[in-house]
Image (cartoon, rainbow, N blue to C red):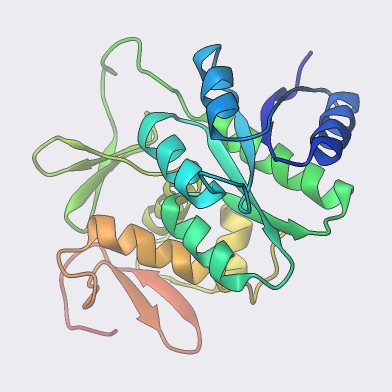
Length: 242
């Protein structure tokens, strides 16, 4: 039984073939593409569970393609960046990537990250066959989080696009209201223990979800910062503690 489908987008043929062989040997169905045009052709044949996307591509770079993917497809995105390219990692996460891995990478680490993103992607329904009998939508800021469909909606009922990781973060908060959650605890709750607790990408992701759920992201009232400790979800308005 396949562990999932992975599309590898990299202009280096040796890297593409090496990753495809390695992931295939660990149960994944692997496709390859050398750039944006080939990636779109592969997507037209069927969306994968995870796209492994090199940032430094000629022509359309990986960041541009990540935006294209997030706007049109419900897939997991793992950015492949050069070692030390912190800006690429931050921008990639801002574009909607679910994770990143730096070159030169350890194949076992890459496999763990692919498996983690694939599990989240496969666990999120891509389309609802019918309207749930009793949808469980919990208010968070100006939005409603649907735990059954793993979707976020505005008060007007319009869906607000979120990634699998963003849903996991929001669910962690609504499951633990009025509790201070450290970065380490959030990583545990979102099943991302392969990350380090001091990894600042968790802060970038929280900034992203605040832009979606807060009335004023610069003055967050739903997801508040507790300095030196972590973050706290406050279901109802109260005295500002940011």
